[in-house]
Length: 185
Image 1: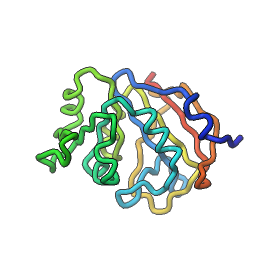
Image 2: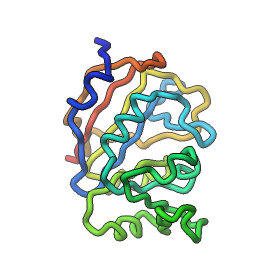
Image 3: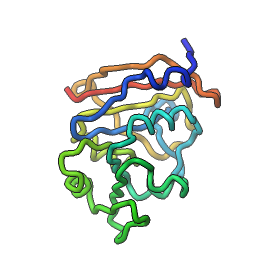
């Protein structure tokens, strides 16, 4: 069933990690799930997912890799209403006064003490973070991504349990999608 997402956004649950969560949107490439990027960009434009991402992460620290930071449009750097932590071994100084550079995921987590935090990309940071995360929020697009070169890690059912699945929506750009939330077992 395809529903109007705009009318339901505020009524959807707002997942939150106990300590560390990962959040990503994915399509598939040649039947392989988890396609999240192509040449440093998200290979889709789905405004509804951006609104969902903002709703879930707003007010909480976000950790991202340098390439994810660089892929954000300049007008959205740093992401508003969130502490922005950039994991990079190449950047010595913050690229913006309201962002902080950390040399590792562990350093970024230490910088926010025990505050719950979201990892928002990219692929390399997701692979590291998912081994420590307690929550995963995934947008699944029914979309084939040609030539995807960046993939999110798979969540093994032995370690993760789906706790919530949204209805299916259709973006105003025509892309069908749904949301799910997962908890570590």
